[in-house]
Image (cartoon, rainbow, N blue to C red):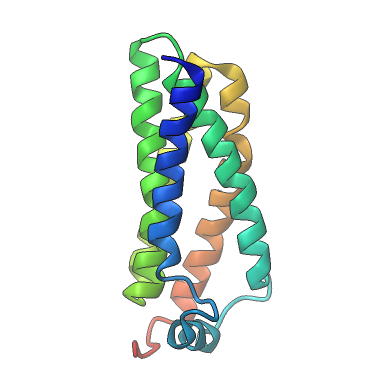
Length: 165
């Protein structure tokens, strides 16, 4: 596949996930959600809000590059697995804000985070067999998802009885 078309397809996937997810984020555009999130008991190592935006901008760029490289790779079973894992990973990035902030369910959001980590791990493995350079780009995502699992589990556990409003 032509690299520019692959980049466009990957960009559409990333862009759609981010636009859909942004609908639920605890920003000034969503004051009730922001207040709910502020009311949660969070661990000391929770990054400040702007850090999430910076990190996800970097990770989205890496996902874009990885997606473009695997979509444009020669057809193979490993490439197909990598594409499916990429789609599952990107889907997780869309689903988390909906579940955590839209539904206000830290417990289910932890499950989404774990599922996204599993998909990200599969992405790294399948991409390694397809394009080692693209696989290297998945490592920061994998690291962030490990951290996100620890953080989200802690948020869930600290707020098991937090009233959903």
